[in-house]
Length: 224
Ligand SMILES: Cc1cc2nc3c(=O)[nH]c(=O)nc-3n(C[C@H](O)[C@H](O)[C@H](O)COP(=O)(O)OP(=O)(O)OC[C@H]3O[C@@H](n4cnc5c(N)ncnc54)[C@H](O)[C@@H]3O)c2cc1C
Image 1: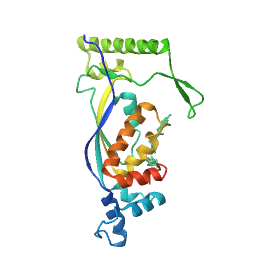
Image 2 (image 1 turned 60 degrees about the vertical axis):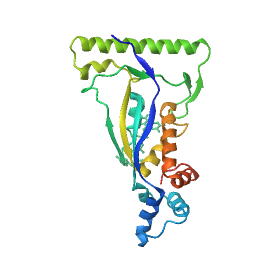
Image 3 (image 1 turned 180 degrees about the vertical axis):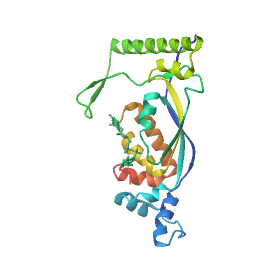
Image 4 (image 1 turned 90 degrees about the vertical axis):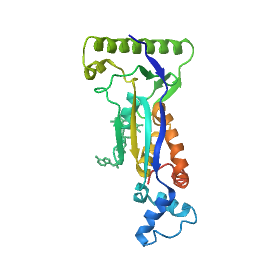
């Protein structure tokens, strides 16, 4: 029986086929000028489309990311349905690895749903929380392995694993659906554990579509 391994989450861009130019060309189809030279970088037109929320020209393109995250973050992520595709690691076909979420700084939560205030734990309480967490993960991981040793199917043995179990998935979206995701998750209102990854997604997006990303921010991060 092995011990659990605590790791961080991460997101990497696997491939993309998207550009600011494509947004401009798609928008110009409506006036029959899609082939017009792309001279000004598209800032004016993209800014207009973003402001007026003419969203469909932003649907021509794709980004595929590989995400490694705890199950609870994956659950939040996969709530995004429109224009998103997912393929996820299986707990039926493959035996779970020993990876569990290292976690972010322990914090307290006060106030009402939607208006919570978070403060970092300090002093000995931090070590106590960490110890309780790691002990419970170790117990769950041991139980999982023991069930497998007794011949229980992987698809059932996983029932003992906690939400901090790491998983991985491929996520494909288009620039518009990506911005909708960012509007809700690359923000301090979202849980830190998904927001940290969403900020990395924003960086990758801004590398590929710098003008669109800038206009998105100028438009108060409201997706078109
Ligand atoms: C801070 C935060 C807290 C949250 N808390 C909770 C919670 O407590 N419980 C919970 O269940 N969820 C919660 N969620 C998830 C949230 O309700 C959404 O499911 C999630 O953010 C995805 O947003 P979406 O539906 O707009 O995105 P998508 O599913 O990608 O949809 C994009 C847009 O398409 C349209 N659309 C998609 N599907 C439909 C449909 N069936 N009918 C009509 N229009 C549709 C809507 O305009 C929608 O905004 C939370 C999300 C955040 C960011």
